[in-house]
Image (cartoon, chains in turn brown, cyan):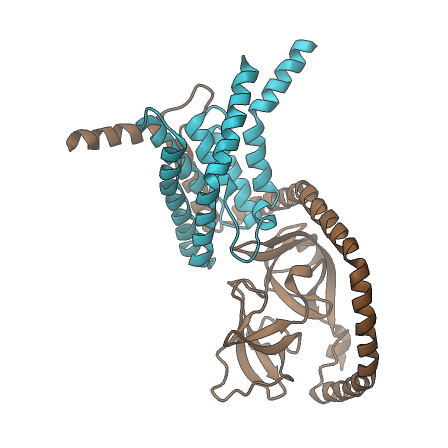
Amino acid sequence: MSTSRDDFGIAIRSALLQRGAKQKFSLFVLILLSLFIFVLDISELKPIKILRSLLNDGVYRISAVSSSPIKFSGTVKDFFITHIFVYKENRKLKTELEELKNKDFQTLYLQTENKRLQDIIQLEKKSAFTTVAAKVILDKNSPYLNSVIINRGSSSRIKLGMPVLSKGNLVGRVVEVNFLSARILLLNDLNSKIPVMIFPKGSQAILSGHGEDKPKLEYLPEKFELNDKNLVFTSGKDGIFFEGIPIGNVIFEDNKIKVKLFSDPNQISFVNVLLDKSSDLEAM
Amino acid sequence: MAISFKRLRKLIIQMGPLILLFYICISEFHTQFYYWKIFSFNLQFIIIYYWILRDPDILGHGFVFLSGLINDVILSLPLGTSALCYLFVSLVASYVRNATIRSSLFTDWFTFIVAILIGNFLYFFLTNKFGGVQVEYISIFYNSFFTLIFYPFFWVLFEFYRKFIIAGAK
C-alpha cells in the first residue's frame, strides 16, 4: 500500500519538476506563474488593466487576420450552396411574390396603424441618439460565450456598459473596452440580463440570455397576457440603458415566453454604439 | 544552402503541432466548429495531452503556457485560466508518461478522461468563482464528451505525423 503511494508521489514529483532536454521551465514553475498572473488579473490593478488592454488590441487583430482563411472557406461554401439552389429558389420566390402582392394592402394598413401607435407612445427616436459606427472584427458564438469584438474602443469615446444597436435594434452592451477595440456581450449570452418593458401594456420584465438565439423573459407580472402584438423595448430602469430602444417581439416557444430579436445576433456585421442622447432631443 | 533548407524543413515539420496549437488558440477554432448547439470539442486538450505524453520535446511546457494566455485574451477570460487548465492537462500527461512503461491507444484514451475532468473542472471553477462568468454545466459536459470521442481519431492522425517526424529526423 505504502509502496504504491510512494510510486505515485515519485511520479507526480517527477512530472512537476522534471524538465526535458529542450525545456526551459518545469511544470511547477509555470503553474505558479499562471496562478500569479491570474491573481494579478482578477485584482484589477490599473497598470495590469492597461497592459491587458494593449495585449487585447494586438491579439484581436492577429486573431482577425488568422481566422480569415476559415471565414473565407465558410463564405465560399455558402456561395456555392446558394448558387446550386438558385433555380429552385427563384421559382419559390416568384410564388412568394404573388402572395406578397396580395398582402400589400394589408401591410399598408398596418404601417399606418404602427405609425399612429408610435406617435402615441413617443417612440420615434430614430435619430435621438449620438452613436458611433463600428465593424465587427471577431464573432464569438461559442458554447461558453456569445460576444463580438468591434474595431472601436476608448479612442472613439466608447465606455463600459454602453448599449449597442444593429439596424436600430438593441443587440447587446459593451463589456470590455480597449484602446482600439471593444467586446460586446450579446443579448443571448448566458450572462446578459436587461430590464425591459413590454408594450402595449407596459409590463416590466427581465430579458435573460440562455445561450440560445431567443432570450427568455423572466419576472413577468402574474397575470401577463401573451399576444402577437407584444413588443419588447428597454425600460431604462437599470439607469444604464436609455428607455425605448426596440429589442424584439414576444413569442411562446417550448412552454417558455421568449423574445424573437429584431436583429439576429448571429448575423451582425456592423453595429452602432450609443454614446449619448443627442443634443437635439435634450433641447426638445 | 541545400543543407540549411533541409534543416529548415525538418524544423517546420517538428514545429507542426506547436503551430497548430497556436493557430487554433488564436483563430476562433472552437467558435467555427460549433454546430447544433451541442457539438464542440477542445482540440487544444487533445494536442497538448497527446504530444506531452508521446513526445514532450515537440511541445514545450512554456509554449503550452503561452498558448493558454493567448486563449484567455481571445475568450476574454481572466489571464492564466486556460494556461492553468492546459498545464494541468500536461501534468496528467507527464504523470502517465512517468508511471507507465508501455502505452497504447486504449491506455492513453482512458487516462485522457482524468485530464479532461481536471482541465474542465479547473476552467469551470476559475471562471465561475473568480471570472464572474456564468457557464452552463451541460455545455461543458457536451464539450468534454466530444473531446473524449474524438481523441482516438486524432491519436491515429498524430501517431502517423510522429512517425513522419521520426523518419524526417533520420
